[in-house]
Image 1 (spheres, rainbow, N blue to C red):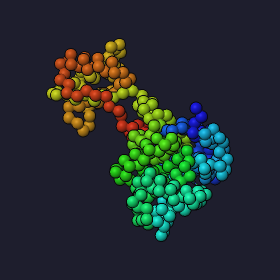
Image 2 (tube, helix red, strand yellow):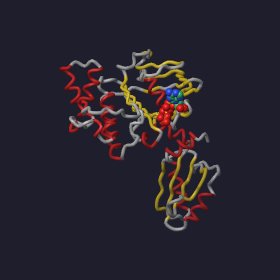
Image 3 (tube, rainbow, N blue to C red):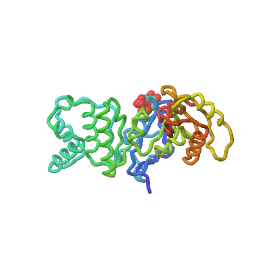
Image 4 (cartoon, protein in one colour):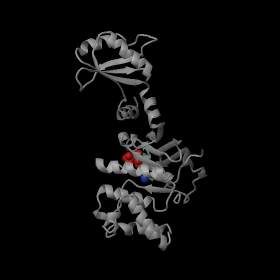
Length: 319
Ligand SMILES: Nc1ncnc2c1ncn2[C@@H]1O[C@H](COP(=O)(O)OP(=O)(O)OP(=O)(O)O)[C@@H](O)[C@H]1O
């Protein structure tokens, strides 16, 4: 299927500085794509290029297979910048009505469009409030409604979760789900991976203008992690469990998983963290049998996902 967004060797310089270096991005239609990278990685530059607000130094952008030429992107994408401009003395409905006029929506449809958008972003009750009196989360939602005024198939959201409290984040997540059900393709950026891992269907990690890794969240996790982790808690002597498990590290066994490392959990009592070469459930079950056979009283035995945030930091620290 033709992807909603594709970039081919997309580069952008500011003077002599290369902000984006031969980026190949592919975003399938209907996905929620999380674009993650530390400050200055090139996220905003990419989103502005995709929105047609910046011109590439070289390379190509295709939206639904069509090459993006200057000025052609505005109808295909909705762009939400990472800051909200100040709009003094403008009420919420007037703000949206203004942008609906800019997009040439005729007056008989404008009022309905504004009402539908306010309902979508749950701001109907704030219809006549002044924009500057809205909370940060409400302003974000209004900004999102603005990006949706012309009903674009693609939405580009720069740091939509920044500065939101936990409740506002949950609301944002719900809103993104609704947009997905409406068959929109959404790209959103953040420098905090955990903000996006739960929301997104796919993620791409960018650093110094280059894509480091990209794909479905679980696949990226697997690639970064390159194995599995087990958390084992014992009822009595953790020292005995540690000896038994350490005895297995590095040994070549056909029937047990290959153990890379065994360490005590830093914050939990009588608990060990085991790093394995592979995430094979059958082998893990055999390990449990083996440990019980060694007389260990196991009170907890579970696979745990390594914190994606730590993996990300390790990756972007160049380790
Ligand atoms: N207008 C500009 N002129 C010169 N350099 C720029 C300009 N805009 C961005 N840059 C530089 O390009 C690089 C990428 O910036 P960009 O804003 O795309 O990164 P980002 O990943 O969005 O960062 P942040 O998370 O801090 O918003 C940075 O080194 C930045 O300093």
